[in-house]
Length: 147
Image: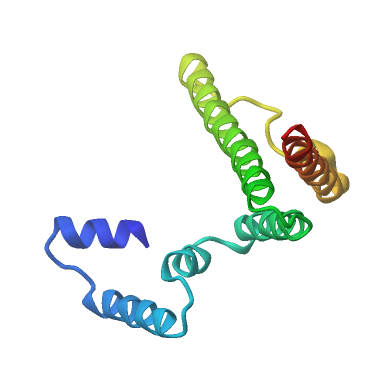
């Protein structure tokens, strides 16, 4: 989709039909008081990417609903954002490291995929996700108890 937009701008052939459909969807979302940016991101990203984001939002909602003090809610939110930002930064650093390795050696590094896990790959990824969610919940609770 982004390639289509960039090519359209560079070649002065913007696909106005798609642009107008997007504008219409954004206006409709705003009329129903649905924030258009998160909606657009949700439409654009695949379900495999949106599921962890959705579950993280649910964890945040549950942790915040257990707090009545606005400052405690703020601390829970900030700890979760800090933790998630660290995970995103770590993924970025790992990607740069893998790209550097591939460029330096002239080949794709082996062992970074999930093929080695075979049929257990889905269960292992779910277990890792659960462990990360637990660590995020623990960090958020610790932030509230320290204040």
